[in-house]
Length: 542
Image (cartoon, rainbow, N blue to C red; front, side, top):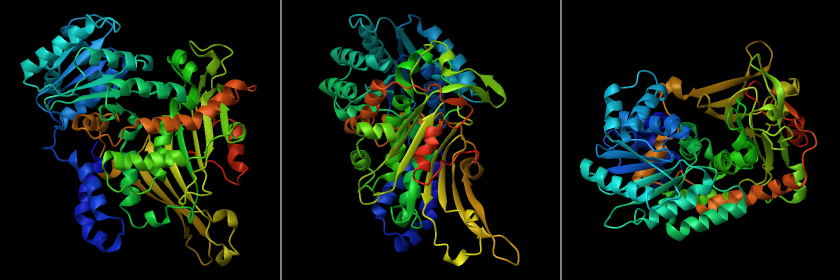
């Protein structure tokens, strides 16, 4: 969990003197970044006393991600002693029954051999109330009474953060009822924060409405739009990798980079989520949030500081600079696909249209790829190719920085296909790390060039750290750091980019679905998207 923070601490102490003479990036800014990363590595740094209120506490997200993340934070001494959880759900049950369920969930999902003492610590601090979310007279009065009693019993100041692990159509309604019952107002030095899971809207219009509804009752600084992808170590390390290394930042531009590829591939199909997924699709589900966050971190300019709004200002500039899609662009620079039946690691799997709760003639895409153009000085004429899909050969997420070819004049007698260009591969999952790909001479009496890789792997260097991806984000919410959370303007800018594509796809139904077999890297049209530019996808098995 702390690979990045350990790296930052060691890096700062061993290289500051060198940096002061070699790096032209402002040290005050870089030091601020290191300080933020080191903060969680400091075992004495804990969050303020607070209560976490989980709406949707009986759901899958809570037991698989939120409880294990809180357990990991407590294990590493990041949670305060004065901490409590209040679960809220539709199901009515006693707190004792909820504690029993939480104990069972932690034993299943909190990693091998969970600490019984720590599990008991959680149980003592966990409470539950349930009822109808539309009944603010009963359920929300019960929540208010429980929070008052929990704070009094555990000597916790009235600092509350509300986690909305509920369907997006309930976000505004539940938040309004929290505020209506006096649980959202910040006064007497106490804070109230609200975490909203994706998807935040389903198009530009709905995202704007949701933002408008929430900002009528909350301040922007109270709203934390979560994307668990940004909790991954490698994603956080992009900023250090770019701005903390003098060998990379000077070449991170159109003069040296040919193109960028971002892939988020999943081996699984829709599993038991067919009902939800068929109303969303790959484009809505992944690109305006996960993938655009990766795009902005890769492409952004150095911020003036690493305060939340300074970082998000630069991310917002990138989203604003992405060239809008015309209807014609949506036909030629965007590709959609749907998986058919096929073979995944030797096992036969069904087509999407044969999955549970999926209509037999569904036109929902399970694959999407786009060619993005960023209209600014740094990235002019450098395409960003992004793709995401289900039922692909491997679970694989990465950012590929492909550099331009070196002049071949010195290697006229060397086979051109062996003169591979340089690239940086930032691996996000399953194995987090960074690979530098370059050419070297093959030993022998004649000049032959071969491709070699220089690899950095988090587990090899820092040891395996059990993490759900939510630890850093929950901690940041507790300390009031919104750097890794989307702002309202960023959400709307993301939807502004993809909504024209959604409109065209809705107006012109696909005629060839399913158009890629399970176990392949997507439809042939996605390959053509790059081949037309003289490029090709870098697959994890290639």
